[in-house]
Image (cartoon, rainbow, N blue to C red; front, side, top):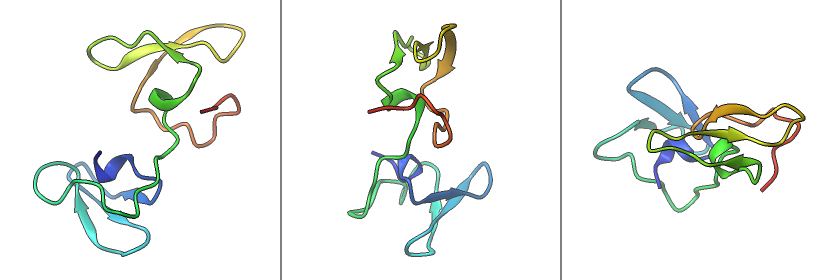
Length: 85
């Protein structure tokens, strides 16, 4: 698990983000990017029950709407009306 998959992660730029709880700067990858004990899984398409058949790049199908469409597993789904775990 990486910190950028946490609900408390605020993306700042292409290299780093900030923890909304500790206010610490967090690198997206490399040293210091692993999730902390306060990790809460963020709402992302890849963890939704309507996300299916991802390929090796994380591109799958969203089956939550009348018309199925492709979706990225890493896409934020915090405002999706069909998101469900």
